[in-house]
Length: 268
Length: 307
Image (cartoon, rainbow over all chains, first blue to last red; front, side, top):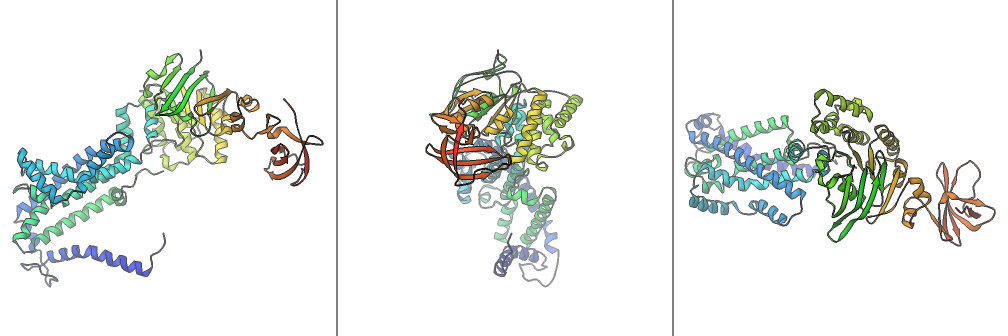
């Protein structure tokens, strides 16, 4: 790899600062003792972290967001695996259409999806329910799960499966012992990316969630509409801390680059 | 009755004919090569035997049994691919153990068979390595051990040595031949490399455009090519006075076809000549015996025995 020139280095430094600054500011403000968003703050306090304890709806919204992300991503991956194998393997009528359909949530504005789901769920009696949240989130995270699953399915040499068949393996055995382990890296990174997107989703969810089924971003969004105190910054700081801890754990266990870039885990 | 019999085997992909009525009888223990340029239908033929491609017509019989009625997983054939197709998430030993496990061969017997198979291909010490930790040649040996350990009725080799470099390929050819002799498994090799086919096979099937141009022993096909295609595919050839003459059969003489040496290339054990004559350019190969040979621009006469 060639070394960067001073100009490129300066550019990259500015870019990183630009990316990180908002996060730094939020974490900084979270430690203010004041009753408003004061920056830069001169005194330090954990006041707003203790304050979270007085808002159990934030805690429950956090757990709901985790559960929602985990569940909808798991379903999205479960749908993606057979879809990705079919798209990667076979040429069949409607193949292009199917790929486009699965990818379409990327193209549709989430505001539109939110209104559509609100109307639809009210109609079929799922309005404001957790089931409704899961269903809608499956739709929006599916493209991310499919994208990465597809990448590993396309990279799969079908002769490896042929070899297994010739050795006497049934189709179910080939899937369990050969195909799934080989697409596992794509499957795991697909799940992770889908989870992040679900956890982050607010534009659509704000239409669908009702009091009692609010996700963390929705709860925060609704809170800052009525309040100007730094509670949301301390909540944000906690989320950032959890995220960093999770990323470090993932990197140790699995390798972050492999996870997010979707690199094949079994290169020659 | 022959061991393996292909009867008027045919495969079309849309309007394209990949295999066009191929018939072949293979004896038990025989090593037969399907030889031809890419697109001649040799790989499709192999895949039909393996069961990964369904024939459009014709029959395949193994020991008198209709093979097409048997599922690929139940045919009991060992296959080695050009890309090795090892299971990358398993060690060499686990790769080799996969087949016996599928056959329901248990613990001790399975371990013994795996060890024997790895020993046979000279990889006894590499059992715990993953494919990515092995060289190309070693991976190919694991693939061979994995195919042989199930004691296949037929061993199918799909361009197995094409990914190896020239020197290693030659070593593996000799080894493959010895292993096949030791185990005695009936073997079908698909290759585009005429030298490889001739070195390994009891018989070659020279294929072109989905048809068998000639089925013969390598020596027979080389010496008595049935068609101009076979003659040109199985090595260099000169068309002289209406008959095909191999370059190594032409000698420099005091009389005969007159010509001028255009190029002379030294290739170690032999000299390769291009001689300009009134019948066109003639390729001549002469053994290097240490004697002085005509140089470029020299006037020569060419003579060859008529057989």
